[in-house]
Structure formats: structure tokens, C-alpha cells
Image 1: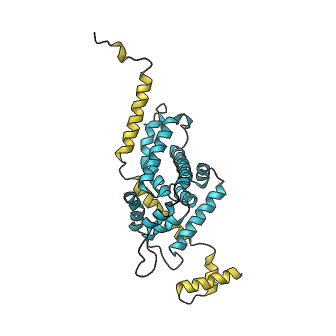
Image 2: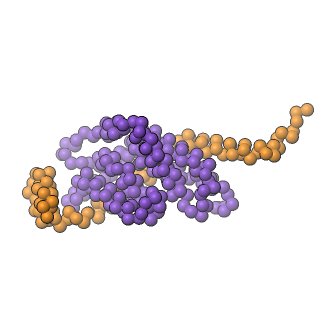
Image 3: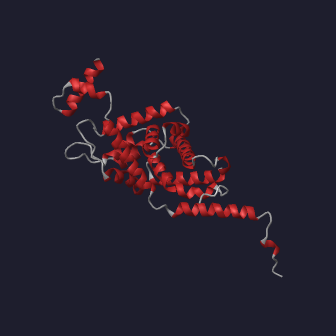
Amino acid sequence: MADTARDPREDLVNHLGALRAFALSLARNGATADDLVQDTLVKAWTNIDKFNPGSNMRAWLFTILRNTYYSLRRKRKREVEDSDGALSGTLAQKPDHDGRLHMRDFNSAFAQLNDEQREALVLVGAGGFSYDEAAEMCGVKTGTIKSRVNRARARLAELMELDDNSKMELTDTVTAGIVAQQSAA
Amino acid sequence: MELYALKCVWFQKLRKKPMDCMTQRRRARPRNEQADREIDENLKRAFDQIASEPVPDRFTDLLKRLKEKEADKTRVPDQPEENRSDG
């Protein structure tokens, strides 16, 4: 089925879903995420000569997307200063009756990680990339990715008060929480 | 360690119930592996769910447009259509 001579751009369509999920986990905003995917596709299309056909296309695309995101973030930081307030507004959750953080709070907990931690955790924990691959994609050392992932997990566990006694009651609500970001934006 | 004692007090306050500082010390350092695993599993489930959603037309259309543009670009040099004159 895989024809070696075929244009690698034909494969772009197979990564659209993963690109959207990655974009959403970084941007936390559906509109921005989709803009990121669009920019990534155009860049990938026009720079396909820089892609090594034998290598991992998803990793290549994710690298383009995260670079796009970080340059956008730098630009926006200069332009808008209120991004924090706007975000926390949409993420505000009503406290639970028993005072314990619940699964839908995974979303707010996740949002409290910094971009670098969130990115590392998503790449390694959800994207199926190795620490080495993630390090290469992010342009940092493997140890840096490891510590980002560890800090991200520790922070999430702390925020959700996960310890030996409390079993995580994460179910579909987690998913719902993250997915909800799409339509919310 | 002083910091440690401080942490224990903080934990006690937070939980509003008596807590043995020694047990807290024992498990404060190595994090719960199960929690880590569950975080990853849930994150992965969320990620996969979003990834498997139907892709908006916007992106498939974009790829189609890029492809057409490319086709036009490569067709221009030899212009096979242009040779067919109307007369």
C-alpha cells in the first residue's frame, strides 16, 4: 500500500486529528488551536522538502505546530496582557459540595500547568513519544523533558489531591472537560 | 528538616484531621505511581477522543486547495491546454 515514490504530503490528512488534539492541549482554545493547525498545514505543505520521508511525520508536524504556537505566544504577549484573566474566567469552576476536586477539575488543573509542562506531558503521556523524541521536538535535553513531565504529573496530582488514599475518579468527565474547550472558544 | 515539619503542619491544616507526620514523610517523596498512570491514561483518552473526531471541512478543503494550487503551478510550464485553440 505504501508507495515510496508518492508525495509525503498525501499523508498529511492522516495526522489532522492528532494535530488538532495537540493544538488544543497547547492553546486551550478551539479557535486558536484550529488556526495553529491551519498554519502548520500550510508550512508543512510548502516546506515538504525539509521533511525526511523515512522519519516520523507526526513528530515533524508536531514540531512545526509547537514552534508556531510559541512564536504566536511571544507575539501575543506583547500585544495582549489580559490573556490570563480571560482564560481563568472561562475555566472557573463551581466548588464541589464535598470540597474535593473532581474529574471535571482535571481541566482546570491541567490549565494551571505552564505551557512547557503541558506540552511535555501531552507528548510523552498521551502522544506516545519517547522522552528522547519529545526532547528533540522541543529542542531541549532529554533530562529537561523528564523533569517537565514529572513536575506536570506532580502538580496535577497535587491540584487534584491524588494521594495513596484517594483513587482518581477520572472517567469520561476528564475527556468532556478537555473537549469542552473546543466549543467554548 | 524544617521545611518538612512545616509541610506536615500545612497538610494537617488542609485536611483538618490528625495526620501522622511520619507516614506523610514516607510517601511525600516518591509520588504515587498509580496516580501518574491514571493521569496519563485519562490524558491519553482525552487526546485520542479529540484526535478521532471528524476533521472539520476547513482542513480537508485547505489541503485540497493547496493541492490544486500545486497542480496549477506544475501545469503552467508546458501548458498543454493552451495548444487547443478555439478556431
